[in-house]
Length: 259
Image 1 (cartoon, rainbow, N blue to C red):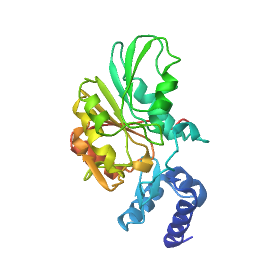
Image 2: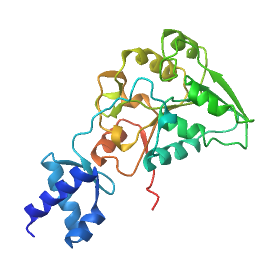
Image 3: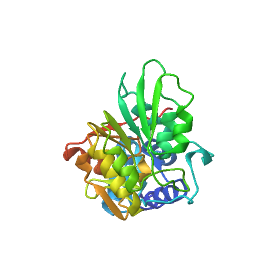
């Protein structure tokens, strides 16, 4: 098979599967590791894909929305990368910390697996997450007040003022997209001021972003990427974007795929 033919097949696999590993290219096309990596580099230079730590993902990553009344409890399939990021983030919580937990699915996965060995406080603007926290004897839960959305979240001006009166040791946050050039971005204007208030009240801001959201630029900017102290992402995140984020002074933590 000529190189051009192999490249076409790689792109077909990528379009169908949403990702491809360098090891898979080696096996399918009987080529060496260096050849597989060179194929991906050439295709990336043509703008046809984005290289990751172990392979590649499609070049165009888009932010996405969920139905108005969708909550993390409606998730039917837990993605490995989301769960791995949540588990890694949990390890940064220490005794007596006051932490803010994002209302997104990665925050929900955290809420179901939080430490039980020591006391700490969790602040959340999600009634879904707050309900999960009721089962912990060691956690003090503070529910952010305000106008409740169909998703079971409070993120209006009342909620923003509420969190300005709290000091967080760590805020665990995510959104529709995160990039080196545009920073943290979302799709709904209502949440901008709320997220900015949480970030401003936190000693350490931790961004939790799976591959699907890295390099994505949604409609509204919340803050620059370097506002965050750490970024936790997964094994498929595009290498070039992570390098740019690191150059801004953000510590990038890449969780490994569980084989």
